[in-house]
Image (cartoon, rainbow, N blue to C red; front, top):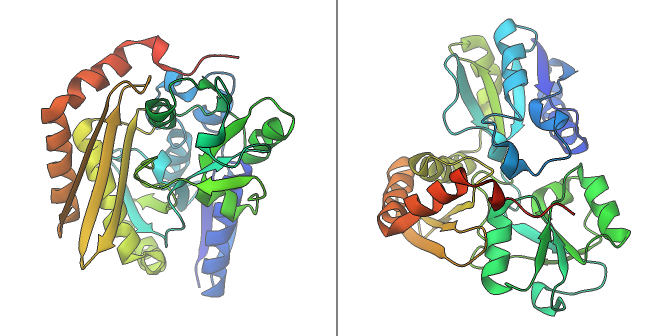
Length: 311
């Protein structure tokens, strides 16, 4: 069988993801090598992601290695992958999705509603911040960067009363001890693609496509294609306050999506069903734009004050 070289970020979670794909490929008889690549997002650790705003900040250097032929495939958290890939690349597979929702972690408190007035909550996501502030405007949101271990340790050391992280990453790394509740999509609409892995290759690499397309999960592909079509229609990336969650319901995809002001003062929400993932995503995106999403996103892109407070 083929010898396959995987490009991946070096974070704890990224390595878990790359090793997971490596194991699946080895089971099919392939020889697999792993190359760790440091991305722009890995180098900038002291600034909230929303203030960085670099498109492809977690993927650009990996794609350069792919283009140069140093690696044959890249394994990404799908939510980090821009909705429009640069010329010369293709998304060959979306793997089976684990829980795409967000989780509330706390040492002292059982739920968001149990947090005291003015509690410190850690997140560097404007999407999470906006939805938290919509129901609890009293909460004080502070940035939270670093790998999963670092974030959990900061919680344990009392820097925060609670933190919000993706349930999927905690599940994959078996770091679930402080999860108090997994937040429903009606309360905290997840990021597009959250919980799924995307496998990227050089466009037109037929042999690699044949090796890897068996990793594709059709249900996950349909749901995330719908979410990413919504994100693309709105012109947003993973650092803006846009949520998208699609799932199969009665034989159709049902898409829930939000666009929100970072302070939670305005949350636009739409939910529609359909059979065509791209058409559904674009339809819901159009509905949000007609309701005023453009003004919200222009505000986010035009102000540095949108990001969570520095501690």
